[in-house]
Image (cartoon, rainbow, N blue to C red; front, side, top):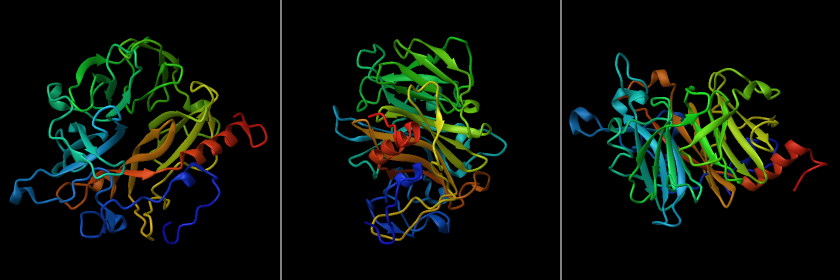
Length: 368
């Protein structure tokens, strides 16, 4: 156990984060603001050396998103799906397209959950809008779904475009068109889709919209809620983004971030559609010290911590991924020694399941 770290009683979601194992080494000889140094550059997905492109000709990349799937039936590797753009553009290129708005969908693989992840040379869908993809989210399909074995969603810069593949190792993604909703067009950003234990696909987006699809992922989703955020007592309703949904321990879980407050919240439901409850405390915040390393007193304090993703094994969360930036987005101008990357943080999913049952049912009336 790391020096100075003492595990306490679980009183909020954030208490379930665990110290990060050091995959490579902790080093301060790398890009980034002082508050993210030293760090392990082998954790997650990162362009380690930001060289001057005018001198080297090298394109430096900055990364966002970061869904992880383990391919147990293929090469036995961890596959991370993310978006990338030219670091020279800064976070958002001024007076033109570029930055995150011109990001491309990519894949990286690793032998280990925490990394290092090596980016594949090929874009996920190079023949579709030149590989354009942001809010990249990848998930497994139902075994009998004729669409394939895996699906990917690209939103925000694309209007909820759907891609599928039969094999992660081959990396051949087929464009399937727009996601379908029975009410027609909807704002398709920060889309998350899960395969529920009842075999139904459930969709949640940043607007709190929930829709279900009982057939193939190619079929039409049926709207269940326009916006669940106002229905949850105590939950903010404005400036919500980046919801991530999952099922574990008999309950549906969701973390959603209020970007203006730089605070994420944790909500729970028994059926995943309604009856959502806000749990005590917060899920995470860059204003709190929760990204710590094993056997060390080192804490990384990223300025932006967004786009949460969950990694589960046998139905239990083992880690979360985050897109992180070392300074405010508007201050990242490119070629300035600052960038974003994807990090992987271990998580005690068993402890969370116990906390969730207590929060939802009460300590005296838990359902098992």
